[in-house]
Amino acid sequence: MPRLRDGRDWTVLAACLDEDPDLFFPAGERGAAPAQLERARKICQSCPVRGWCLQLALRIDADHGMWGGTTPHERQRFKSRSRR
Image (tube, rainbow, N blue to C red; front, top):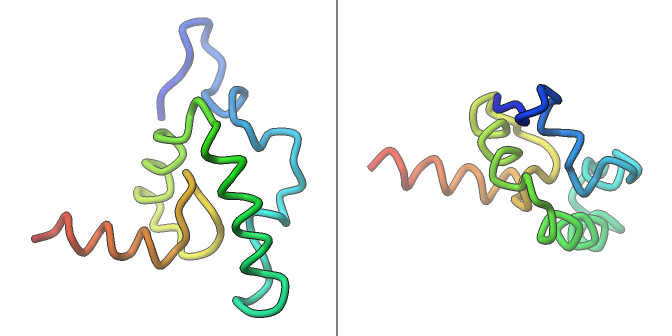
């Protein structure tokens, strides 16, 4: 994964750095989970390293949580389209 010019890992610039990780990884898909994911998505929208986060999620085949502003379902659709 990319590193910054000063050698630090790109994750130090992540908008989610000081957020509760549970916000991005809700338990299940019902109840509070949809609202939780929307809150997480809003944080991702302003993130300067959103693209790198999404690349990592696709590379490790992350099947849970909000990564780079995308849900597992959205990432699966993206991967399916890119295979065509």
